[in-house]
Amino acid sequence: MLIQELYAIGITSLLGGCFPVYPVSTALGRTMVNVNSGSKTLLSTVFSCALLLATILWLGPYLRALPRCVLASIITVALKSMFMKCAQVKRIYSISKIDFTIWMVSFFCTALINVMEGLAISILFALFTVICRSQWYV
Image 1 (cartoon, rainbow, N blue to C red):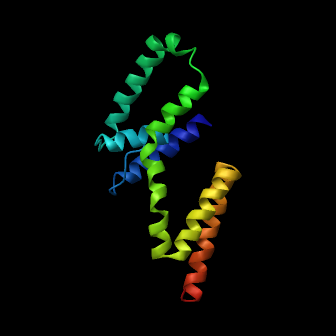
Image 2: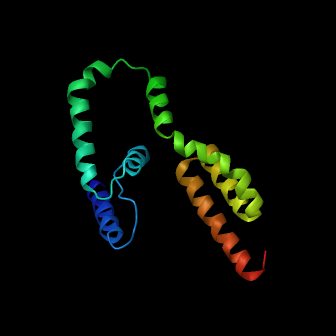
Image 3: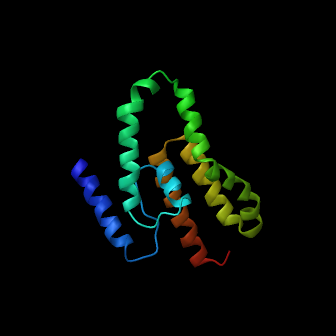
């Protein structure tokens, strides 16, 4: 399982070097921090991992007693810019009703069902709308 994930990250990083893509680290929160800090290469992941290792080794025993709500609030603050994009829903609605529907289906399926199943339903729904758009002008 771990080898398969390493192959996947390696192949996507290799292919991503041919196109202007964001360097992928591990978690979405850490990737967003890297993007917002202006990182352009995967070398930033090495520094991020070193900082994380130092935090776990030396500060870990002191942070062990933190409740989960504190950790959840840290993640929420780190992903604040992503939550602020929900304000663009009105703009999406005024531009394209179909894109708005894709956004709503994706949001509710991911939030109410599960991330994996929600993502699968979202992709299938988006493909369905592409087929409908190609068959009939909407």
